[in-house]
Image 1 (cartoon, rainbow, N blue to C red):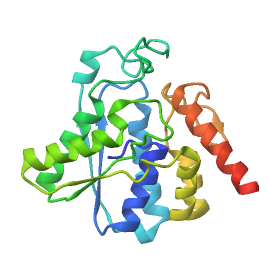
Image 2 (image 1 turned 135 degrees about the vertical axis):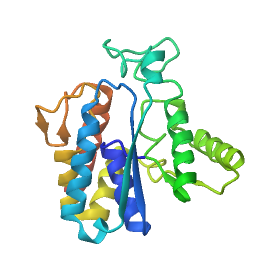
Image 3 (image 1 turned 180 degrees about the vertical axis):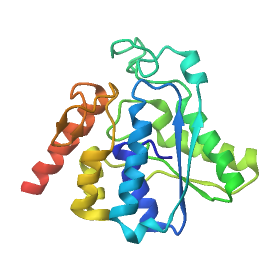
Image 4 (image 1 turned 180 degrees about the horizontal axis):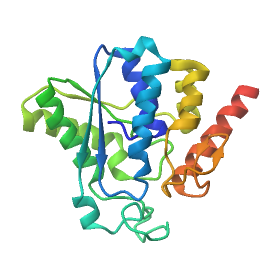
Amino acid sequence: MFSGGQDSTTCLAHALSKYDRVETLGFDYGQRHSVELQARLTVLQQLRAQFPQWAHKLGEDHVLSLDVLKQIGGSSLTEDVAFAMQADGLPNTFVPGRNLLFLTLAGALAYRRGLQVIVTGVCETDFSGYPDCRDDTMKAMQLALNLGLERRLRIETPLMWIDKAATWQMAQDLGGDALVQLIVQDTHTCYEGTRDVLHAWGHGCGHCPACDLRAKGWQRWHAAQAA
């Protein structure tokens, strides 16, 4: 499950280092930061060009449309409203059901393509509190997919128990400085869709929740490197 962001790119590198055949799946759900759909193509192109040991493992790329999430609305990721906290304690960047739909469709695609593992970059260690990113949710979805499809599928979450600093370190371990720089320069995380400013940690507005998590993780990682 590949959005073109830091987390999913790190997970893609993890999958490429582990498996012989990897297909990628993205979703167009009317997100404000739709620039990520172009960024993901750039990342795939650069992975093929810079990492010949992985290039031959990269299979077909898929993009599925989920406009229904924009129709439901109510999220600052699908509507032009300011980022804010809701009464339930979650940021209004939460898109209800998004990851549940993503995983259901990923399972259906895996069924049709003869694939056994769904790799996703969800995390409940250093995140915005989304309930559909939690380990319990992933386990429940894995069970539902196995029962509903009558097929043995595994949902793999390489980032579940690590923070953003450790995610930068994982990228370093998997692909060295080249992968870290690819993530900095070519991936997209910013909810505002900003690509005109390049910070040390990557492109972004610098103040949305996604930029905040990414920047703080970069700072902690660099501090650990210098220690």
